[in-house]
Image (tube, rainbow, N blue to C red; front, side, top):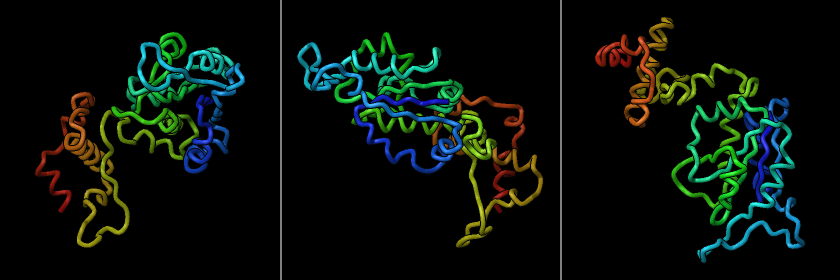
Length: 245
């Protein structure tokens, strides 16, 4: 798939995709990322992309004309989705990342200053995306997060695709605890159940731990997580505690 990022600070993306999973995906041509300078789509000698807001407020607002021209110029697929990075948008989660990964082309518009002319959100973008309830100085960092999150769901990007299915939030829950060598470190032992060889028992333990961690750290997710028959058959707390002995 292809990601197009429209920004007034293209240099911010010079190093962010130069390592890790996204870099390997680029090298393998599983994804393509193209960064566009919004100023290249202006038509005045000053390459102006912003102006003062109507109504007399302070600050500057990104103008609609160059953004519309940029999107129209970079759209390669008729069904390409266009999203504005905005604090008012739909919060990025695993479900949205998976939706984006299924698209042939995603165009991301990075906001700046006091915002973007509302006609972009109403008549050009398919939606707005936020990465949290806080304000950044611009949409560039948010765009990088969106690309990284979505790219993981593109087939062939992550070497072991099963690891993506087991990530936090993949089933509406946080991930279960992970352990590796040594089996004991400074008196801290790895749960014995992980050495039992009983894969069904291990899976039940992991599911229970995921539920427990989610209830403790993100109780808001518990009500939304689908409870399977396996959940209802989980061992009680005392039995679970024995796995740590």
